[in-house]
Image 1: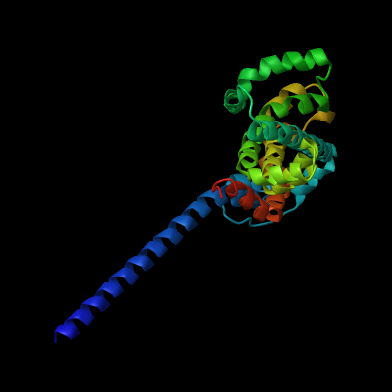
Image 2: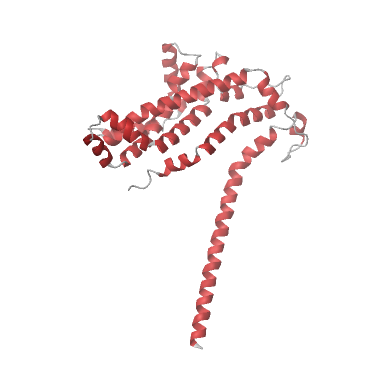
Length: 295
């Protein structure tokens, strides 16, 4: 009898633990699904709105378009100005990301691997640059762009975008260079490599996940940037990027609010970013977590 009671108690304890484990798992799935719905619903609503007609959109709020149409997408690509804005965004974002990676990798190597006076202070100065609101430095950058003669051209964006992409790139890459084992660098020096060869052939390939992550994030920042693009290309529509082109959309008729057309343009702009994230998702996760644990 005592043995039977003990076995029953053990079975009840195991059953209670299993019940708690399943409850915790169910709660976890519930909150994950809740967060996913909260995050994805605006994208879903914009996607559905892009297929709605003008009359349907203002009649009632419907989760699915009753009469799906592609006229909104036809309107987006009809004039050619949106395609020009897409090209401008692609060129500016790619060039900005490339410059941020090249310059940021050199700066991160110096801050992460070399020892010199004021290194920590300089690193925190770089970090503080990411905390300034864009509007607070707009007037100063506006003066610089005008004096350089770049106002109204794509060069104005190439000059100003590194202000917010480069500090972030340097800060992230510094942690990766700092986390690399010193023995790798010492072995390369013993084998006769110069400091630049060690950096280019040994250390830089090891930071590939970080380069992909920071490069993609810099690309997304440049792709979505609106304030600088609006102010520095206001006088030249041919140099405007997609956020500005979407904001300046006008309807086909007088006093029309082209909400559906704006949603269609937003989908065209967003889908390439989503595809980039899906293609490089493994590299992004690896890059975001590689520097978290040392060893």
